[in-house]
Structures are given as structure tokens and as C-alpha cells.
Length: 307
Image (cartoon, rainbow, N blue to C red; front, top):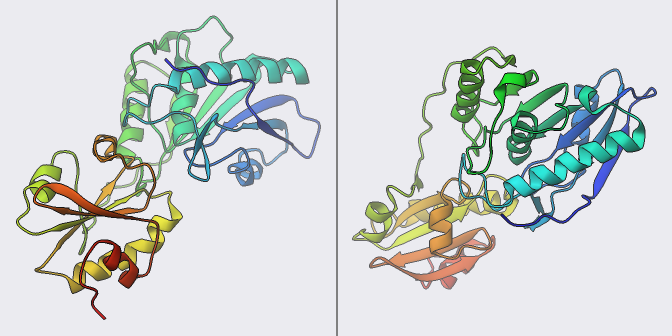
């Protein structure tokens, strides 16, 4: 396991009245210690909490991350060290401000959700938090993470049914696991599973389909390496779709979500996104980084630019 620097940089938010307990609120991948602050009035409408919002220790794009992902639900090599750092922060913040750790609430979103569940449910000699709020994440399944559900605090799990990054199935999986273990948990009223969305002109490919769709393609293939949290990726997506429409029959155009398919990203050393790559004959031939106008993108990929 890799070490995580401590102490963690934190943003501390006070409620409208004198706080009587602590809320530890943990952000997701690519964000920072200010990202979830707008949620505080909704989570604490009476202003009873002192809210501590820590910053993840690892730089990532224009923000921070808690671990480099190995994929869902493994988390990553820094997951457990990050949980340790957050556990220490919970202790020190409660001591500094005169609160009981056993009265604290721990909440997290996305990567922060995984850390919240790991911190509150793993086997530990430290007092359990009073409750956990798990938003749009998953229950980590990683070697070295030993859960003790017998003394688990209540857990509220909430997950958007149309979450494009971590599918709602992981939230439902966590609910089912905690229910089977007898943990007091709650969730918003279940909604019907949405119908799979049409990928449209740009087909989504995965580890299982990458070889057949890309490496064995008779046509040259444009691959859009992207992630839902990446704003430049969202900016270039319509341009990639335009290329797919204009080049139909001459090129195949697909997309790879690097969060969902980290093995593909590692194989082609995708370290910055958006990365638009041209594969021909089973090999990565050229790549263009960043959001660019269509003519510039086509030129960098060695394509004859269409006016």
C-alpha cells in the first residue's frame, strides 16, 4: 500500500448555531475541499454541525483524488491509506473542537462514498461514527479491507439512477450486501431501472469489446478516451459525433470511459484527456490531446480535412 501525506488540508464550515457534533464530508475524484460545500445547508438545515471537508492528497487533472483507480469495486492502491488518513482526521477534528467521535456523521460522494463506507464499516478499535451517508458510490472490495458489520452504524445510501460514472447497480449492490449483513440502512424509494441509452453515432466500447471493435476493425478507428467529469471531454464530444457522421463508411468512431475501463487507459498510456486516437491495423497510429475544432483535430490525426 502507498503512503498518504498527512495531515489533510481541510475546509471547515460552521453552521448558523453553536455546533454540537461534527460532519466529515468527503469529495469525489477530480474535486477539492470546496466542491461539496454547497450541499451543507441541505445536509444540515438547522446548522447544528461543524462540517470538515478534507482535500484528497493526490493531484488529478485540475483537482484531487483519493486513489488511482484499479476499477470498480476495487478502488485503488491508495484507498486504505486514504481511509487511515481520514480516520486520523476524524479523531483530531473531534478532539480539537470538543466533540465525541461516536456522535459524528461521515458522508461522501463517489470516491468519497467508497471511503465513507470503508471508514465506517471496517474492523477497528476506534469508536464508530453515529451514521454514514453514502452518495453515488460503492462498497469497496479490496484485499486488506476487513469489514465488521456486527456493530455497524446506520447507513443511508443514495444513488442517481442515471449516474454516468458509477452505475446505480453498485448502489443497489451495497444496499443488498448491507441488508444481508443486518445493517440498518435506508435508501430513496426505488425507481425503475432506466432503459439502456442508445450510443448514437459513437459506440461505447469496453475491455471485452475493444479487440473486436477497434483492434480487429477493417476500417480505421477513431477512439475518444474520455470521462464524465472532464469538461473538455464534454466540449469535444459533439465534434467527435460530427466526425462520425461525416466519415461514416470510411472510419469507425467509438469512445472509452477511462474510469470504467482503466485497463485500456493503462495499455495505451492515457494520462491526459480528452485524447482522440486513430487506430489502424490494430495499432495506435496517432493521437490528439485536448478539445480542438474539427479541422485541427482531423489534421492532427492525419485525416484529409473535410471543409
